[in-house]
Length: 215
Image 1 (cartoon, rainbow, N blue to C red):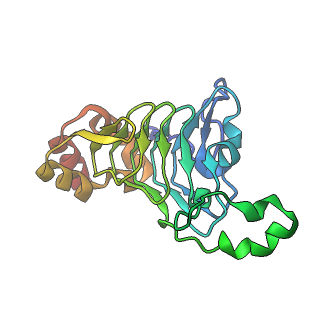
Image 2 (tube, helix red, strand yellow; image 1 turned 120 degrees about the horizontal axis):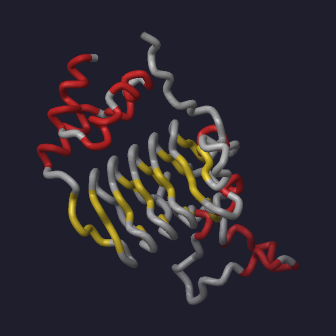
């Protein structure tokens, strides 16, 4: 019997007849962005421009880290630390970037305190038009509702929505979340994911644990 062939995580367009869908890992070139296998972005305009259209004000050194098997809906935006303005004086306006003699005072806008890396866990679903602010950490298995603005960390398997996004509920209780994190199915080898896909998508935690034991 022929073994099933897993999907290919190295192709940019996993569905050749749907150019609006791109896998991020083989697409990304910036050393400041890291995406795990099979995380994808969906956009009817130009999904291949993800690094410039969807990751904004990314001047470093903070990184955007996206886990494996994440689904990013159309218009998802990541605002990075480069968007920060001074807030410790009367004006927040960045005068030095306007040039002329004002540029002599560029030290006023360099070295602003950032919030660190923006980290998206594994198996996260970011809905249409959602926005993630600098330094936010979104836990594994979380869901962000369409149009949400995420300004603070999201727990594992949490569902958040709104502006600013608030926790609506958690998909599982603490005990089951711990079981899921221990299983970490997203780290399974691809043949194992292929074999147990139905358990991953629609099975119970018991089913997943049985699959892990079989490994």
